[in-house]
Structure formats: C-alpha cells, structure tokens
Image (cartoon, rainbow, N blue to C red; front, side, top):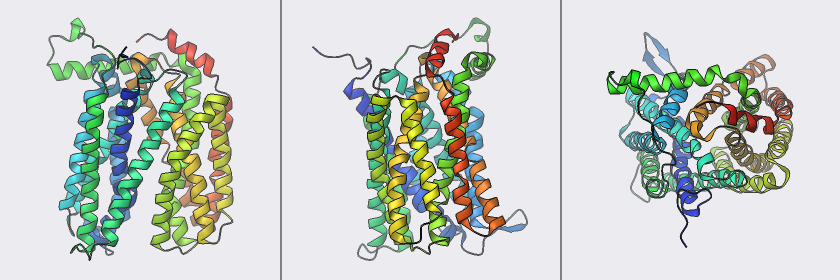
Length: 444
C-alpha cells in the first residue's frame, strides 16, 4: 500500500526538502563564507580601495554595506511575503523562484573581474536575497512535512544534508584553485569558476526539491474588497493585512515571542563567532590560510554529524533542554578560545564549534516550528528570519568595540559568553506547552 506523499514524515518528501539544503549550502559555504569576500577584496577592488561618492572606500566597507542592504531588503518583505505564500498556498513557488534567482546570479559571478565593483556587488545582492528569501519558504515547510515527534530529527537531517553538500562543493572549489596551474587556469579564473560551480550546484540539486516536495495546503480566494484592484496590488495588500493581523495578536504568543528574544541573543553570539573566527585565527594566532580553510571544511563535516546527534538527543530529553545544552557548550567554546595558542588547539576548537553549530541551528528551527500555527508557517518563519538577521548586528559591534578598547581580540571573544548566558536564561523561561496551546487559539 503506497503512502500519500502529502502525509507527514513521508521519506520522499523529506528527501526532497533536505536536498534544497544540500543545493543552496554551496552558495553559503563556497561563495558567501569562502571565496567571494577574498576575491572581492583582493581582485575586484584591490588593496587601494575604490572611489565611491567622492571618497576612497575599502573593500571590507563596501562588502559590509551590501551585506546589510541585503538583510534590510529581507527585513522589509519577509513576514508579508510569507503571509501571502500562506494565503495563496505558493510556498513551493516562492522557494523555487528565490532559489533559482539566487543560483542564476551566483553563476553570473563568473563574469566579474578586476574593477567590476558595481556589477559584483549587484550580482551578490540579488544572490544573497535569493538565498535568504528562499530559506524563509524552505523553513516554512518543516511543520507541514514532519510530525511533532519527528520534527527535531527532520530539521537536523536537513542541516546535515546542507553541511555535507556545502562542504563537498567547497572542497571541489578549493581543489580547483589549488590545482589551477595543472588545469591551465589562472588563480583568478579558478576562483571565478569555483563560484560559478556553486550556482550550478544550487540549481542542479534543487531539481530534486522541485520534483519531490509538494505544496502542503490549498489557496484562498481574494477577499471581495480586493477583487477590483490590480492583481499584484491586491495580493500585496493581502500579505500586509495578514501580517498586521498577526501583530495585533502578539499578546497570545508571549512564550513564542520570549523564545524569539532568547534566540536573537544567543544567535547573535553564534553569528559573531562565525564572522570573526577567521580574523581571530589570523590576528591572534598568525595562522596561514591553509589551516583556516581546513578548519572551515572540518566544521562543515562535523556540523552535519552534530545536527543529527542533537536531533537524537532532543527526542530523548526534549528540544528545549537539548538547545540549552548547546548554549552551555557555546559558552565553553568562547571561554576556551581566550586561552588557545596553537594551530592544533584552533582545529580542536573548530571541531567543537562544528558539533554545537549544527545542533543549535537545527533545534532552534524545529523548536520554533513546533510552536507556530501550520496555516501561517511561512509568515511566522518570515518573522524568524527577521529576528535572525537582526541578531547579527550587536555581537559584531560589541566584539569590535571591546577589541578596540582592550587592543586584543581575546577579551572580545570571551565577552561573547554574555550573549549565550542571557539567551540561555530567557530560554529557560519559555513554556513550550503554553506556546503550543496559544497557536491553536490564534485566528489565521
């Protein structure tokens, strides 16, 4: 007897969902974290910076600005677009539209050469919006395809696919760069080809998602008051009005909001560790690029295992407890980082980071998914994305300020323990049972 693919916990549906993480993690690892920041700084802009608005601007300033612009664009549209996807039952259509748009502009980075500053930044901006926007709708499928009992495991499996897929593609790109002379390529062209390969990887493996992941609900008709409007304006109005309706009900979701604040705090610590790890290894330990890239690859592999391990743990001790364990481990990570002196210690720390990174990210997503109404999952994951992006602001600012005041990144790295402890304290106050009862009382 066959099982309906629209039923929860269906293996083929879960495989199709996980394969999107496998696909788009090539962009996250190879382009966003690996090659493009270095390529943009060293090749596209160069060490002397570029004239911009009547002054000379450095590569890192331009890069940071456009990362912020991409985050702001997502901040503006995420909840309303999610609400529209819920209303029209078009999560899959939005997912693939953002995904293939991002993949296309990632591939087009191949044509960005020295001096192509504006073109590189615009291609990156569209690719980044495609990546982050697509993830809203990807995450929104989780409560629809996984039962309450299996949600932690499925979320962890998705992250595991992503870490392994992203790590494999990054390894291929690095091999291309290391062996560029044997292939008759310059190092610059090898880097461009490696980034283009990430776009093709993203587009190619997303075909599994297109085939196996099915839309999980049926759409609604436009309300009568909007039917005389231009169609695009009517649907925009629906998305905004549904978002405003949810915001008016925020009092019902106290524990969900408390979790989002806790998540914003501890995720700020996590994102800061990720952002400054390479700089910390370079400045404080004088590590060469080989050790840094090896550590990044190792983190990818171990994070996949960590996502599955903590998914298993969550099924036995509860999701909230498992997340709290990861936060205690994160506190230990930044405390130990203060004392490390050698490449071996840095590699060991990278292994621990990989273990807790996969677990904390996967379980945060599934814990949130268990407390939101299924019929508004894309809208609520839009809010989740907003809090996630907003959380990437204060940690780096605190790290920079403390580094400047003390003259050392060591004091700054250990100070991040405050974010993990504060997040842990607020998370302890979250009552998931009350949050799950509240989602049944909302009107969507």
